[in-house]
Amino acid sequence: MYKLSIIACAFLCFARSENTEKATLVLYRGREFLGIASEIRINGKLVANMSPNSYLEIYTPPGKVSIESNMYRGSKRVLVVQTEPAQVYYIQAYEEVDFWDRYLIMQVVDSETAKKEMKKCRKNEKVKQPD
Image 1 (cartoon, rainbow, N blue to C red):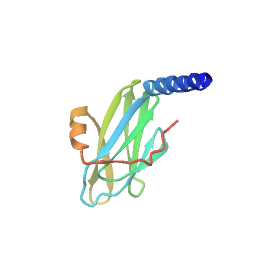
Image 2 (image 1 turned 180 degrees about the vertical axis):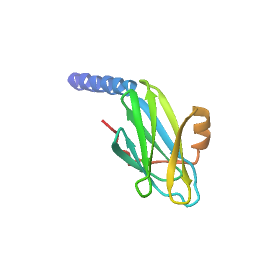
Image 3 (image 1 turned 135 degrees about the vertical axis):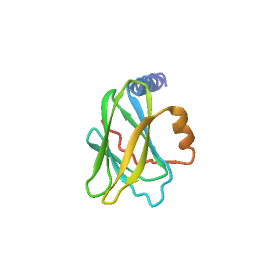
Image 4 (image 1 turned 135 degrees about the horizontal axis):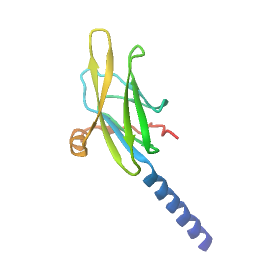
């Protein structure tokens, strides 16, 4: 029993230190009329397909993070965010449609704005966390 408690304690300590070393990105999209899903890539790795009225939680190592959205006919948009350990960054995404194309516009917003706009969004549980 004593060995089991030591192992559990070591595991919990390791798990806590891992979360404090990473930055958290919260990407969200509100409701959109006729919006379609978009691929989201973090530093070139596909992490999820993001639909309207949803949000993603992504944990990344601190530093420069490239967030890429790819939606329609290969058009993509990239947002680069400089992150720090144990910080949360809220990123609003919304679909823009023009005559020939559609794409996601992404921007960093403050936590108050994000939490207000995210109230009715559902969490996307199918996120592949980047290494």
